[in-house]
Length: 122
Image 1 (cartoon, rainbow, N blue to C red):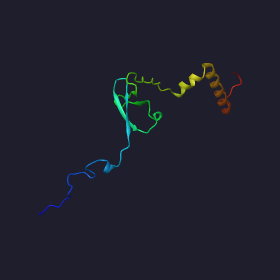
Image 2: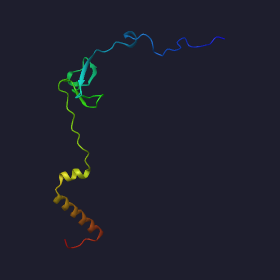
Image 3: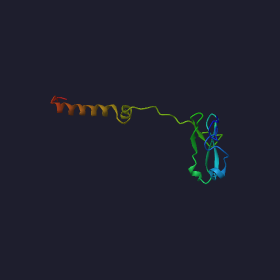
Image 4: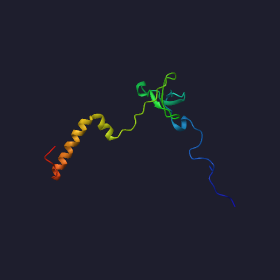
């Protein structure tokens, strides 16, 4: 009995000699190195005809998560993370305690007037 099968058994679809004749002409590119504060180097490739102002000065290093810049001797410093602020914290930054008390008193007075429980004395 002859076993039927594929002539390309064991090989992947699309495998074979790779080169410009199979894949087209590759665009020219430039390699840009970035360094983080720990000395890790990350290389990113950009199209050779890309203007310099479109190539980023700082990226996030995939090794450390720190910012990485093009200057090996002076890598960018990590930005200071601001702690999460609640809505109340932002309100307290904008209002003094006296202003807050006045606004609260006005709101309570309006509420009491709507309910009919407002007192005539203040």
